[in-house]
Amino acid sequence: MKTKEQTRWRTAVVTGAATGIGAAITERLAGQGMHLVLVARDGARLEAEAKRLHAEHGTQVSTLALDLSHQGAPSRLAEWLADAGTEVDVLVNNAGASLLGPVVGSDPALVRGLVDLNAGAVAELTALLLPPMVARGRGAIVNIASTGAYAPAPYVAAYAASKAFVLSFTQAVWAETRATGVRVVAVSPGATDTPMNTRRVPGKRAPGSVADTVMTALRGRGPAVVDGRLNTVQAFVFGHLLPASAAARIAERTLRRAALRS
Ligand SMILES: NC(=O)c1ccc[n+]([C@@H]2O[C@H](COP(=O)([O-])OP(=O)(O)OC[C@H]3O[C@@H](n4cnc5c(N)ncnc54)[C@H](OP(=O)(O)O)[C@@H]3O)[C@@H](O)[C@H]2O)c1
Image (cartoon, rainbow, N blue to C red; front, side):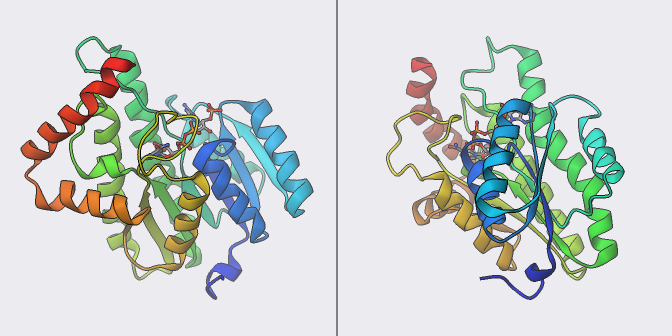
């Protein structure tokens, strides 16, 4: 079901669109008849996904192969959209990467690249594509965070910190734009069965369930949504009930084994 506002949305840009949660979101948006722009690094995989979505849903789907961790990449995307005359109604900042292991011994360049992708590109793309939405008085931006955003997470320290940035940034932009007609929301999945997370985790969710939560969040009003009941409780306990030091110590014990196995 769409709100009155949503019936006016025509085109969505989804980053990290060909796999996992991004692919499930594009499936839902295409199912609603939206035209799509798919962005990720693997151009061939994007093309295949675009052909399939067009064949199954009849929507126009274009693709742009881009490494969003590179400096200037978000501006390139914005220029490419402007050159094509594409008005973006919905932006889903979903592309992301993770890095498992202690900070000591990690590759500093990889740490920087992760922050540039997970946090930098999200902030820059939001800043680039939000103003025309506000000027038109309609549109939506969904930033995919993580339950890891709610507390420090040892062995995925940069990942969780980058997602904490996404959550805080999105909540602030939500407050700035509440009266503009533009919907801004952060959606935080917990462990989800995708190429990024192939580990066996109890209560792991399907990408389609996260996509359903995104579609519900688009119709909602609040600044942040956690996917799934168990994840919502976990985010509340770790993010609001426990002091950060206790949350970090508990997470250290839980994540140490996963880090040692990697
Ligand atoms: N799976 C989980 O347990 C989980 C939990 C919480 C949050 N999340 C978040 O959900 C989002 C989607 O992740 P996923 O689980 O669906 O994993 P995924 O299937 O690995 O998807 C990540 C997507 O991002 C793209 N990508 C990676 N690096 C990129 C770069 N430098 N530039 C442009 N695109 C890039 C990848 O495509 P290319 O390789 O072709 O670039 C891929 O399509 C991420 O933001 C992730 O942090 C996932």
